[in-house]
Length: 148
Image (cartoon, rainbow, N blue to C red; front, side, top):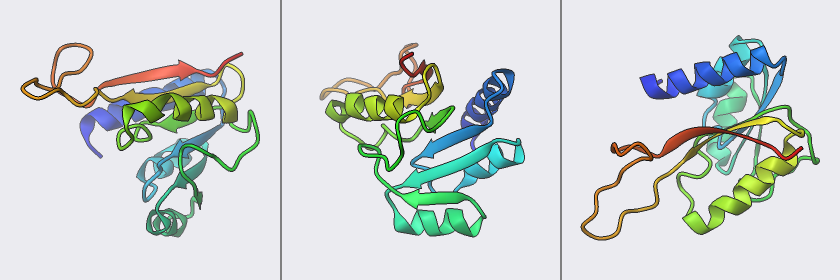
């Protein structure tokens, strides 16, 4: 696990523990690497990913996971006490980000932390990509809160 991602994950786990949250939805969970870390930290993990291959791998690790895309999650309103969605927006066009964030807010309990990376929009021709602090990178790691 890359150092920055590991630091983000550790920070989010610490936040969940400090708030007494014991479950997380992992959006775009991949093969379950982050999910295993949550479980090893004592936090119940439910993952979703659009790839059947990734879901088979996550389940092989013993994780609860199902095939689903970020725009229409198969869960009831307020089903999760937190959401880990750091990869959810990266492969989507910017005009879809708001809808995905709204869907995350729908499945999260009121006031639940939602971890995302807000990607920098693709630079225009001749411009360099930069994050919110002026350095190059994949955008800013942010913990949003679902509506109360």
